[in-house]
Amino acid sequence: MLASLGQVLPAAAAKYGDKTALIAADRAFSFRELDDLSNAVAASLVSLSVAPGDRITLYAPNSWEWLVSYYGTLKTGAVINPINVMLTPAEVAYVTRDCGAKALIASRDKLAPVLEAGSADLTTIVFGTESLSGAVPFDELVSKRAAFEPVAVDPERLSTIGYTSGTTGHPKGAMQSHRAVILNGAMTAQMHGKTAGDTVVTALPCPHVYGNVVFNGAMMYGLTLVLHSRFDAAEVLGSIQAHRATMFEAVPTMYMYMLAHPDFDRHDLSTLTRCTVGGQTMPVAKMQEVERRIGCPLIELWGMTEIAGLGTTFPCYGPHTLGSIGMALPHCQARIASVTDPKVAMRAGEVGELMIKGPIVMMGYYGNETATRETIEPDGWLHTGDLASMDEVGQVFVVDRKKDMINTAGFKVFPAEIERVVAAHDSVAMVAVGGQPDDLKGEIAKAYVVLKPGATADADAILDLCRKELAAYKVPRAVQFVADLPKTSTGKIMRRELKTLDV
Image (cartoon, rainbow, N blue to C red; front, side, top):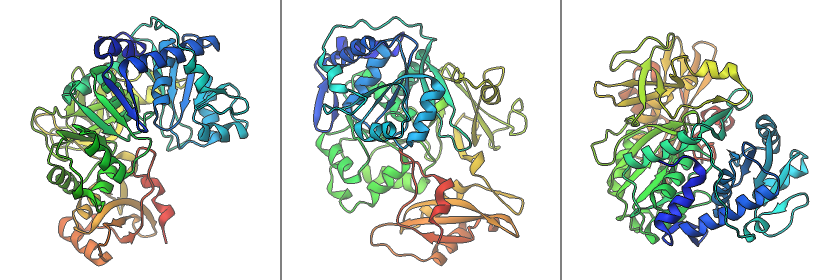
């Protein structure tokens, strides 16, 4: 077991050497090359007065520079603060101030607006060779090749501060130990049978915990990681075929865009042996279509920032149930608790709040003891905010987020339940359901539907399907056809932004 994340690349270089570790933007790197490059970054950061415990913010799209910066930072004993590329300069300023960042490493397109806004009162490093006023060119860091011994760090020490999306108020920084991040990557890799014989294609953002688990697992277990800077259905399909990928890891919308692409069936995806999906619930009908058309298992998973990645999934070498997020990772526990009293466990099949306990649970929210106490019970159980049920054998079924529940005339309506039905319509590519104010019922459900290319459907057909499959109070009161849905950088549909599409 590795003691710290700074040891990941040295251990991989010693074991896998010149094997291809990363392919990004048509450039390939061996494990040894990534280790050498991250050593150069680490040595340069130390020369810039970065010391163990300092926080370093990383703000850029997926790239080889991102990975090298991540591991280089951790080799110094500093704490990494990877942030979402969709944050605004004002949000970046808040996060860097909140965690007390010593330096900001960013791509040119992200750093320039931050500097223009005067939001970065700290050392800044910009990717590339071109200078940017006030920033150190990244190429200067990696050009100074030097041996570097990773700073010894206790496994229980802070490694990462990952900020939540901040749906209400300011985002909170979830603190993760080295042990938690390493364990999550290792346990996930074991559950999904990852080996040095695998090639994994992904466009999941590296700052996101799902993307973090994918790249850390790849580096620890010797996979070849084909990393896309952003998701494009045609590019990803071509990449899977060209690199003869054995794994593809993504969120539901990525699969939906791929299934709807006119050239889907022209690509050879036969080398894929398993795919994973997480980040949001996915209608079973779409999961079945993925398995049928790709020809391999689609393994669902569930996780969150506060647990350094995954909390539940299925092992790839056993049966899996579509529509279930699986069972708790090894060394962890999952339970369904009453939403009014976390000490009360719900019986099999009953809906309550999913709670997680184990070595992956965060150390707390940075500088926010009140929020920490509200999220982690004294006995170590963490509130996830997800409503779910568990069957007799431990399989967990997510119903929806507590915050997304629609209260219509006193009845509880879960968007995911309606989305499951609408997604089964032959003409539907994607669907999202949100709540809308209503004078009579308090709230009503509205479905926003993206049709498959060339497909046609009318609202009545969608509503008729819902009436056949759902109780009357669950049937949406409106359907709007849209060109696309608002999504986060990971591709997760933002239900709270659906109202911006209203016409």
